[in-house]
Image (cartoon, rainbow, N blue to C red; front, side, top):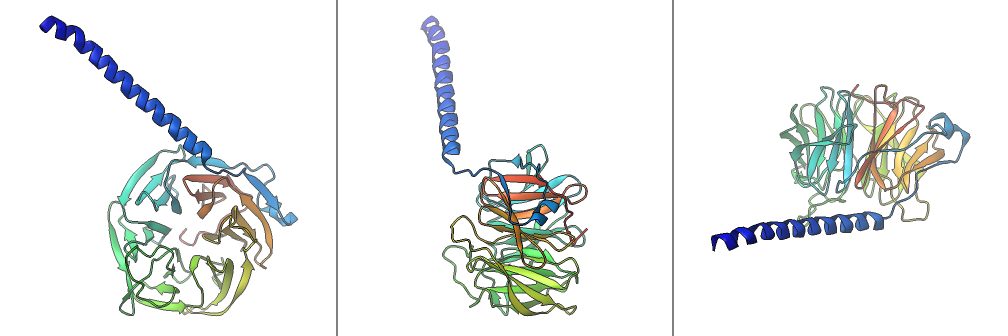
Amino acid sequence: MTKVAMKIAPRQVNVRSMLRLGYCLLALVFTAQAQDAAPRRPFKLVANAPAFWNLIGHDAKLETMAIGFGFTEGPVWDKSGYLWVSDEELNKIFRVYPDGHREEMLSLGDPDGSTYDHEHRLINTASVLRAIIRLSKDGKSYTVLTDHYDGKKFNSPNDVVLGPDGALYFTDPTLDLPKGEKQEIAFQGVYRLDAKGNVTLLTKDLTQPNGLAFSPDGKRLYVDDTEKKNIRVYDFHPDGTIANGRIFGSEDDGTKDGVPDGIRVDRNGNLFVVGPRGIWVWSPEGKHLGTIEVPEQPANLSWGGTDNSVLYITATTSVYKIPTRTHGFVPYD
């Protein structure tokens, strides 16, 4: 029995090893097929006006920084050399490094848009919590800054920016309202959160407010409306109020290739706005200069690199970056 067992055992081990190898190879094949089946657009730079080439070089190349995410959002560049990235499907916040490796920092239901405050603490719109949160310095825990307005829960805070007065400004659509939970606020608003925790409603005239950004001089606030597929602009006053809301531009191109989402502005006031097929570039006067078309539909973007001339783009399952000829306006620098 012992001799027979000794002869059979190695065979059993080999068979098991072969089976494991087979399963691994099949998994790789299925993964590759799934990736091949996923729709990908070619990277293109599409200019609508010559001024587009003042901002993006003809020879600019899109680089894939990291892959394999669920749904990427909330990029924020840190000068230490990494990018904060929210993953709305994996329910985690990561640090992603230039070589593509990632460091899991926090598990959190449906994290979304992010910014730094003046103390370089990461602020995130946590959709499942229906709150604005601040991460600890080590990124391993968080504090809820606000989750109610007028005694009612927010819908699903989506994006957040640091204002010229040091307050936080954020949008609250119903786009990510947690399944099974009720909408308590009867509208989708844009809000101001000050250092004392006071929340002020700025406007409720957007259907589904999403990305937002301030002009470099602090005199304008841009907010896009995902449902209406347009960008609105407001006059911003030093007391933290806004007025004179009007349409800045439309990103309704008649397709279903994407909607307005994240917004960033360069130091000269040009807007870089997520839209159909990629990043739409706008002049301060509201002219669509051109589009950076990317392989996957983006959701948000961030300035970074040593001089804030690199545009980092979170797009579905990946993170991309592209050099520009301009320099980003970063309010927390």
